[in-house]
Image (cartoon, rainbow, N blue to C red; front, top):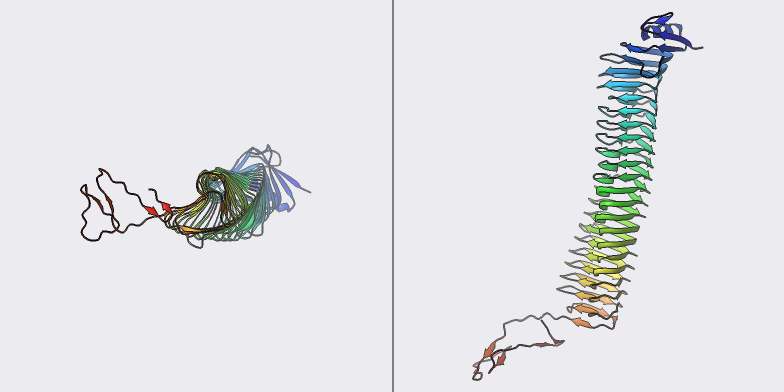
Length: 568
């Protein structure tokens, strides 16, 4: 049977004038107690032991318990507070020494200290309550937080550390100077919560923690929306992040699972994976990222599947010795590259669609920089694929339609093309420059307003079993010191030559009705001597490589090569 006690500073029959005296009376009887407290401000320390329930008689906010310094409440046993306001400074305001502590419809004001502390071996529940200015700390304990608000914490609003296990449900965390919730070497579940205006990551998992997040909304964060580091694990489902610096990030060996999330207007990156972190990201939307939608650097190795990237600068960037696998992506309306692989990294892309991006894929770096594209479609671009440096790119079943240039390799890059198609381009289907090499089999170029193939400088084209249809310029052009071979290729159409070459290309089984033109580059060892003698020539000694004209006011020079007249 519960024994009831009444506290009233105005006194009254069988009433205690302060809370501490009622607690002493309850402890003396050793039975379950309910202490009903009349409205007022009580400046006292509450040492609550046993099975005790403290209730504000006239509802939440009517009873304030506080001290200028030091702790306000210390609980041991099975303690419940309902409707009280606890106010303290520079200490733990409400602590559970042993057993369980439940705060319902309670406000905790902690200026420069800890609002609520659950030490090892204890269990603390907060329900429909508010914690302001101080942090709520679970250390090796068990916690449940339901429908609470944490505001303006000078540190982390909620800290779950050293093996603690805590669930935070349907709550709001705002204005924390550091993190909204930090879980370190512990486990935390955050479901249906709102987090806003935190100084660093809204949700942080470190030191091999496990963090589970679902159905949350994170806004206006100065750092990351959600951050996993130091081999942390966990999952993030159906959560939105808006206005963070980075939407969801993983670093230093972390490995989260992220599904069905929306990352909008992130100032730098939407998904950020670095420093040997992994992670799997599925069915996410990254909208209007300020710099890169999916950024992988410094050895990160994520998998990204069935995600939608729209708006912003760069879609996917893999750089600084990283690797990534990407499938089922839709990338659209970017001002820069849809896909990027740089500096010793590897990117594998399958079943990707890219629409209305300035560049489709660009690669740059040493020979360890590689990209593989399978069943990728590019629409409305300036250049669909650009390979530079010593990078190597393999294309299989890639389609590039409506743009400037289809596939291009420059500097010392290598581009391998299998079963690909370029259509409706304004400049050219595929080309090389510098000392780059392009090797293509079963390449089709349809409707280029310029050339089908072009090689310049010392570039090399090795093309076989390919078709060039309706190219307004040449089917293939070889300029400068470039070279190559065309084997079993066809060029149709009625305008311009099939091949315009410099004598450094091998043509094998070329099928075309258009002419093949060799543009000879003449090297003259000495300037020809032209003698105009109106009375007739008088020549003493041998004269080589010379032409003569007399009885003329002008002289016209023509020269014929083995291939026919040469025209300047």
